Length: 177
Image (cartoon, rainbow, N blue to C red):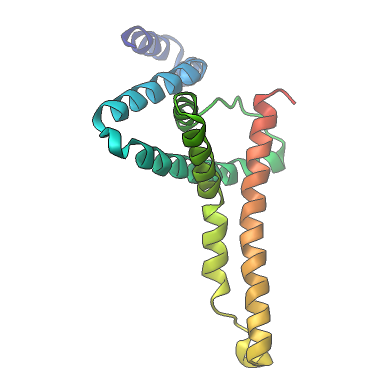
């Protein structure tokens, strides 16, 4: 809001950037909620009724993929034991609005799309690394295929494990565990 902007500017001028950013951090959750609601309302008005469910399924998949990427971003915090003050993201609030305003079948479709989106990075990593094996020439075609399949599974599983660990750590911090 304008009042929040004026307060941020005042704190910035009187106490500096760090203090102003701390003030902004206290507002981040409210900002994310307002932004998600605004985005939801704009989509509700602009997307034709016949396309709303497919549009929302696509948004749910996108939010799931974003969550996976953010999970990998949080992994270094988990390794170092760094406890940031995490808040729900705009996308998480948007997904909540989709689910709250959906019927049971739509909600199920949105959750499935979000889960698939969440797995997309690990699926992509597995596909990208599993197509060719460096050992194919050295161990023969069968050995190369086995090594390629193992690499495919290992890289995809590694990516999935990293994002899950980061997401779990963030969730634990948010819930005070």
